[in-house]
Image 1: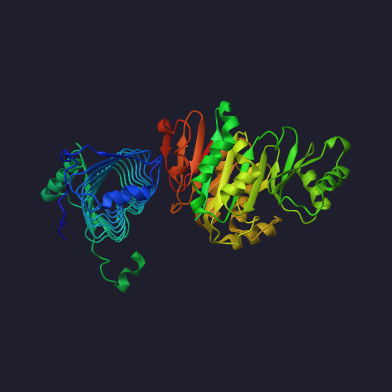
Image 2 (image 1 turned 60 degrees about the vertical axis):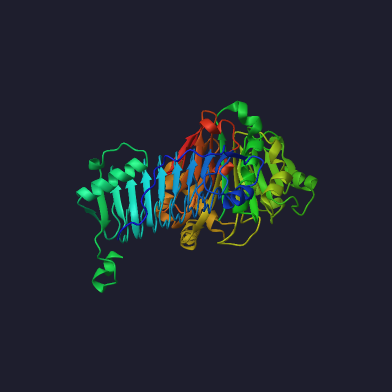
Length: 242
Length: 302
């Protein structure tokens, strides 16, 4: 399956207006999100004192730049569609859940289920990601600078997952057509996930993804994993593999 | 869903602020469990004192007057035991300079219907039904000093919403356990423990976890070993925090569905269900912040 969304560069164009500053120490999250939903292309926001609050910068549909200065809580940048959200800190459970396009960049760690069910766009996590990273991913590209937890890319259908550190247990369990690249060790592969040859086209797309994530890792140091395609349809002989 | 916030203060100069820090953490996990709550505080002046056992009894009203309770307990103890009773919020604290077993026997004989929710030389346990911040305010958490604090907000799944079913569960001296999740085989493990002579107070799944840990500790396990063994015997979803007189442990089940985040500085170790509960702690910007690995036991000692 072809991935339809090309990764965007993390370098965003300079915006005309000065960023709107929101301090969540005394402004509600609802107000921030409402303003973001009425935004027009080119606007930018900086968010101070996020304090781990939930649902920051969700559902953005305009080409805006949002910088969250601190740690975000659950579901940051969920349903992201356009523009760039940067978290200058860690992100909680469900980062960029169901991202459609655009870019989400976390400079620290992300908790579990990062980029779950993402359909497109690019999610970059400079630190580690917890369990179930890219679970049920459907076209999103994910680049993780550190390690990822267990059951990552479970039932992954499309998109690319790049891990510059190690992967936890059951990587790519019941995977369909997503491609997984891991530089470090893989604790174990899930059902129907196998190592596959790293060919020229893979090195090329990996180089592109690493560059888009602002990383300098050598694509040749990675291994590729994908679907053995034995579990696409139920077959009684495979029952022990489920 | 439930919420957990726990704090171990390494720097004694923070001890006077234990209650206010724990209260600020608790405030952020109310959403996770608004039906009931509980607190355990260690070495809090006015609630416990060195060389004295303190029992925490559920409820402010034990069916007899405070004076009658004091006299009843004192009559059953040696004359120099200095039995004292204090009501704090919805909790009755009974203390005396005797061992906890002897004090518990005296309390049970004086008020047979009482429920002991905490015991030891260092810990006081308070729990109730209702809004967690109201429960904390009623007990005066904000002003409490101490070396460690543990709080839990409950959204009940496995047993009824009762004060007795709220966490922490404190079933051995200075030992407290709180739980976010549910044990699926608690009935089987309860039956096995009952066969070994363990007595239960409730139908709660977490009490089984607490009694199991207490039983392992009694058999000589370290806290870390007891929690590794718990992982082999109890099945289900859990993030657990266990505290003793001088240590704190955190463990998540191997699937790690239930959240946990830890912040560690030279001054404290803090654990919470979510980062927002840690956000207001002093020096958090320079803390080492991490999520505990699935299935791994973390312990810190004072």
